[in-house]
Image 1 (cartoon, rainbow, N blue to C red):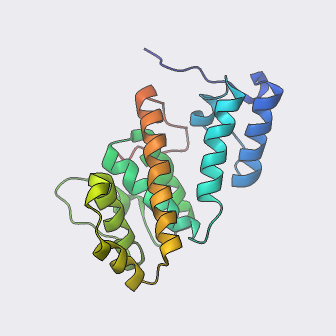
Image 2: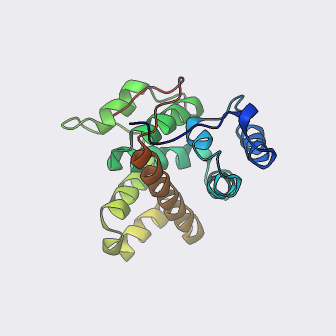
Amino acid sequence: MQRYILIDYNDASAETREVYDDFMRTTGESSVPIWMQSLGHSAPLARAYWERAKGTLFSGSLPLPLKEMIVFVVSARHGARYCSACHAQNVLSLDKTLSFDELHSFVTAGTERVLPPYYEQVVAFAEKVIADANQVTDEDFENLMDEGFSREEICEIIAVIDLASMFNIYTSALKLDLDPNYRAIL
């Protein structure tokens, strides 16, 4: 059963097209992804999801490749097929030192994690937050601070984890199909 309806750019209301246009302008994409088209029936809902994503991913002090890696890791751990594929694609386009096979092996059971050191501490923190945020300790914060992250940046990391979780629930409950340029990682 198809659980959603896609609203193409040409069929969208003027208000929804404004959200689509802002997405394409901000991301540099030439088309609107399936997740956004699935919200296109409601301009306020599309705007709310987009503004949250834009505010979390495209502002702040953390670099976008790190934020994309966080979203990828959270999505993969949640088993969110759409989001893990989308953000694997984004990570690979932003960080040319990583390969699809490395990201795939990262989420494959029984394989050793291979991540550049730059990502390792943040990924470990993200995994702990999604496992049980109540179990995050002062030592976890101190480890990130020892790596050079400020308290504000740690809050930004948590906001990215939360954003990913929200989108994971949305895309997984709808069982969104992958956009044509995404490769399934799960």
